[in-house]
Amino acid sequence: MTSAATEGRPSGSEAVTDRDDTVELLGLVAHLQHVAFGRLADDAREAPTTAEQLELSRLAAAAVQRRDRVLARVAELGGDPERSLGAYTRLLEDFDNRTQPSTWWERLLRSYVAEGVSDDFCRIAAGAVDDVTRELLLEVLDDAAHAELAVAALESAGAQDEVLVSRLALWGRRLVGEALGVVQQAMAAHPSLARLVGNREGAPEASTEPAPAGDPKLFGELTAEHTRRMSRLGLTA
Image (cartoon, rainbow, N blue to C red; front, side, top):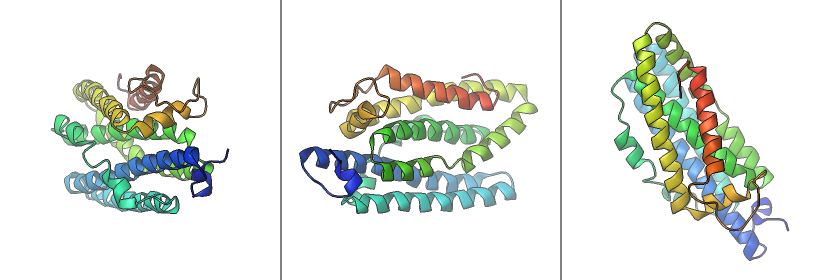
């Protein structure tokens, strides 16, 4: 059966569910880009050099463009863009409160880890949506400009300060634990996300039932990707 997400309109109860699940994921990705805009704008004000201020402000503007592209797809599928975005308003509130950075380097690593984990989760969930939506989501999620900026800055700083490397490795472990907790909360609060994870391409058994919020296979994948990213910085995950 062709899903409504592919056609952009419902064609039965199963198709409506497919479309609604897809819109739910689009809303999450749009929210993450919306949050990224705010963080990047804040980072631009705090950046230690003019060059970094300029680059971060450009990245903030690009996040707005990506957000709006995702919301446009929500509208194409018959969803309400504002409602989809607003469904996740408080998702990262606890994470932000519990991971306040005390230095510029901690601020950079926080964004690098948080965005990495959330983007990986969304890529995995995107394996269950229609081709048009998946292509859009992967294009949005694969924009690595901010990650490359963070890697270059953190590598340079770490090469000159072994104490900083040790501190950032500890900070990274705390961040990933908090970020994985957000994923678990999101899946528990939004069964559509858990259902997409359970139905993704390559999942052991596709099912209309949501994947468990603590799905060990999912969290194994997310942890492995986090370890890979930390290795780029020369940090132990």
